Length: 322
Figure (cartoon, rainbow, N blue to C red):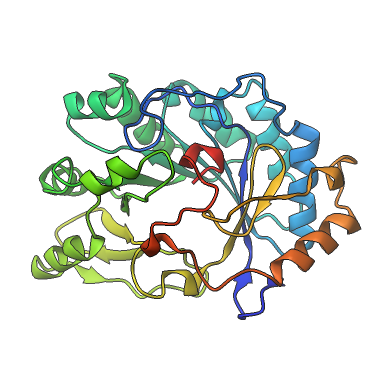
């Protein structure tokens, strides 16, 4: 398994299939996608090569991200190709939920077994203001459909001061829905410095309120991600907190990223990606890819510098898939 000089082990790859997104979320792309829709994103063959290469290096979990990954017309084919690779135990997707009720069954058939859906508010009007789409009921229907298909489903919600931090609607939904909802702190990027100053709220304040209300922390497993999760006997669902500004957040890092243009990112907030696309041309795992990833991983730094307002080369989160 891949390991860096600090002893952190990496079994999880976030693989972006496109930068394009059809939502206009206020914390990411408030003016909509401004890139080049005809950008030369990784082909299905190249994506499969990356997945096979990382599987050969011990990767057990691959998450397809964007942008909005389902925008790709060959998305089901990509799922099928990666889902059939030996060694990949979890194939996950992060989506904004666009047309999810009509699509999720075909994703499950293609090999998907875990789904993360973005829902930043359970108030329809607020959801519309945040995303630019009046689709809350459609997204919620998609979540129900995914659960009925046996998929492991989580909801991602960007925590924003004065927008969704009162918790009332969230707690009401979790009363009867056996889903983990993770609040993610707003992260400062080059495009969103003003937004960050206005809306960032430390997850520690939410953690304190949860503990005061009887929520209990769940001991994280060795393979767990960065979320601190909590459960309550009166609720069917759980709450998670992803707090990248907290002390030692990066100590449990277990994931690497490849952008839709074939750049390896050792951190979401690295200055620049490392071009590995030349090693993805054969549709198989290449020794050159293994050597390149292993070499560059040895130089992975201890942590990001978000607390110093340095977000590296990340202008917005759609660039690398979050």
